[in-house]
Image (cartoon, rainbow, N blue to C red; front, top):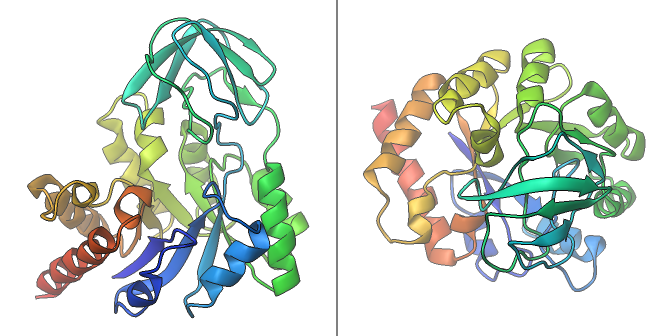
Length: 296
């Protein structure tokens, strides 16, 4: 078993995490703020001696400006078109809103979320008519430019849906090694079609769970991805109970066992469990204990 750890750029516990026997690399979520921009974040995280994957947001829809529903306009990271009215989901699918109209990058919400929607939040619009115009963000391009200067090449691409998404990254970063984050129905179709030929696949369960037609369809989606790429990474919603408690839930432990049974051997810990020293180290220790028992 190998584990990739999401790493807040200013976390003081990263030297300790870097020495854990399961850790095979760090992941930088490029939504996380830095004082000195992309270059500073890359230099801080590569100093720990672990491989670094830079997670580009690609066509993932994110909130740009704050808004107060229920009757409001929310500005997003990309222009989009979609048949309305339709549903939008926030907070990993836990909160629903209704989109009445779309105006370029703005979605007009009427009912649903009853709180401040803040910059950086992700939005899921799982409608078959959805078209997101453009792929890489300005922040993505800034990170790719800084990676090019440093000879770095490992990236993750969120919401990848076509081979041209990967080609766009390759056009800006020489010899790019791209992990394709499968997070939508179209992403699943791409995984079936090309397997690992365009890059290693990742079952990014956070958004994929929201995007599948029915919640239980996540099971077939995970099987599809590992069949398309036997070396696929599985990510998100892994041991998230440790973000709230020092003891993992029974469901989380069973989840790990089932993923191992499917054939996954590389796991990526997400933001929620990696923000604090105790939770990330406990997650690593739990994974190590399960893996040792699994091996007999």
